[in-house]
Length: 80
Image (cartoon, rainbow, N blue to C red; front, side, top):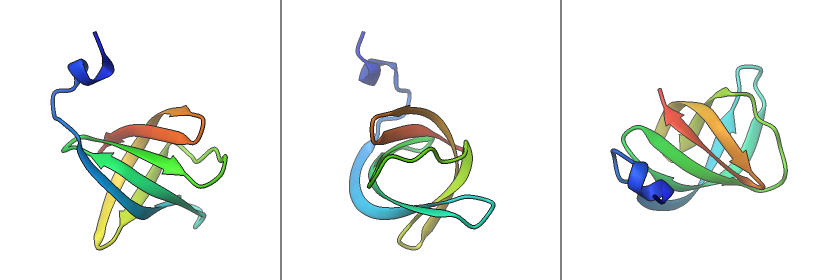
């Protein structure tokens, strides 16, 4: 079964610039690739190991997220 077959909530393509912000004030630029009511996928601009719990800021929206996986420059996880 493909990964998409496991999703309860379908993701919608976003493809907008965003920022990952950690509790220590660090920020990492990324592109928010897709988003659902409970998850996300983003691409980092350069290799980086962000902390597990961060905020994802995209335009006027801010999401508390938990990073659950990383492959190359892509990360994904759930919205808290």
